[in-house]
Amino acid sequence: MTDPAYEAICQRIWALYQEVGAEPVQGGGPRNILFPPPRRDGPVAVLLVGISQNQRASVGYVHTYEGLKDLARKFEYVSGGGGPAGLYYDSYYQSLLWFVQRVNKPFGVWWQVERGTHHLLVEFTDAFHIATDGADDLKQFIPPRMLDDPVRRACKEILEMEVVYYEPKVVIGSGRLPSDLLWEICTGNPVGPSPTVAMIPDSRFGCSVHLSGFITSKSMDAYSKARLVRELKEHSPFAG
Image (cartoon, rainbow, N blue to C red; front, side, top):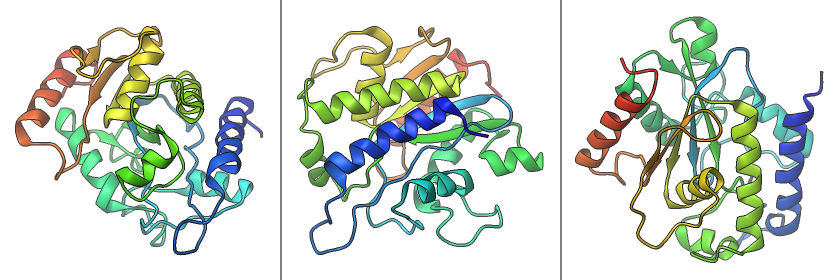
């Protein structure tokens, strides 16, 4: 059965891809892309928003519209779900999942929730769904601090559609771009060069929104992670 809201999100991402991302990358080969997942059974506890997929990630990327929807439905994020290599990407998603589990261990990805080993669903999406190869590559699509850039504006509109679609209880922005877009979506105000607020405890979407730099083992120091974990425990309904 077709989900009109999910179809609208995928169509917007696909249109953006056709407009700015369909050209081969330098050195040959297609620019990769990953759709966000369809809605699963049960509520989304945490929606974690990253910046963009890695062009060189060991993911079984496909390049057709229907193929992308099928991959998004099957993609397991972390190993252990039974799927072959290409359906998970531990070096990125595992560290993010481990971080969220510091707040409450029952957080898990969809196949863990289906098996009953975890019961709080974590979903992942990106502020820019077209894969890039580092910060300089991303700047080709979205120049920093250009708030009226059409690609940036499209990304913000798509991300708002996703927050409405998933109805999460908690949203976490991992990185400057997703955090900036989430702030603008929730408040209607642009972010200055030096943000002074890193959390929206009761957003207009009915969820708490937490804004951060990259939440990875290498990009975020231990003290910053500890502060964010404490914030999540104090301002989310899932503290363990």
